[in-house]
Structures are given as structure tokens and as C-alpha cells.
Length: 143
Image (cartoon, rainbow, N blue to C red; front, side):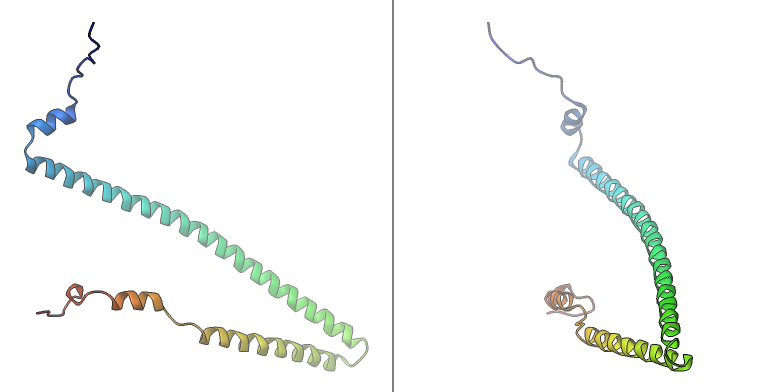
């Protein structure tokens, strides 16, 4: 008894590889890669569309929350003005609330300005681009 594995008939891919020319095989590979790239681009488009839709919904909800927060601050400011108006003239209480908001705005503006001055642009991208060999830069003649 010999335990030989029965020979399987060659698959369609094996038959094609045995009978096709190198040019035909390379053409098939090129076509398959082109199809794969088109499919990947379509997948990226679909994912981008879905992400954009979600981002739009999220941005809309954040805008609504910002408007709601604005009204909360407005009515709290009015409540503070009326509360102070119970112990002093209403005009002075409005002025005090306005000065409080002016101080808050000045502090936020100063802090924001400091943060913006610390922005360095795209330092890593600039460094990477400067490392591109001159032979790869378009429009330059290298000898």
C-alpha cells in the first residue's frame, strides 16, 4: 500500500499561468491593480461622505448648544443686574454687569492672543519637504 496523495487537477489560474504569455499576465496584473485602486477610491469617497454628514450634524448641534449657552449667560446677566438693582439704581447695576463682562472678554482675548502667537505653522511638514532630494523637485535642472 502506498500512501500517495491523489493529484488534483490544475486550477484555472495554473492553466492560465502555464499557457499565457508574460505580457498577458502583466496586463492582467495591471488591470487588476487599476480595478483595486478604483474600488479603494470609491470606498474612500463613501467613507468621506458619511464622515462629512456626521460632522455636519455634530457641528449643527454644537452651534445650537452655543446659542443656548449664550441665552443662559444673557439671562443670568439680566438676573444679576436686577438683583443688584434691588440695592442700587438699575443703571449702575447694568454698568457693573457690563464691566464684569468687559473684564472677562479682555482676559479671554489676551489668553487667545498668546495661544495664537505660539502657533508655528507646519514645522514637521516644512522639514520633511526640505529633505526631498533636488532630483525630485519639478522645474529644477540637475546636472
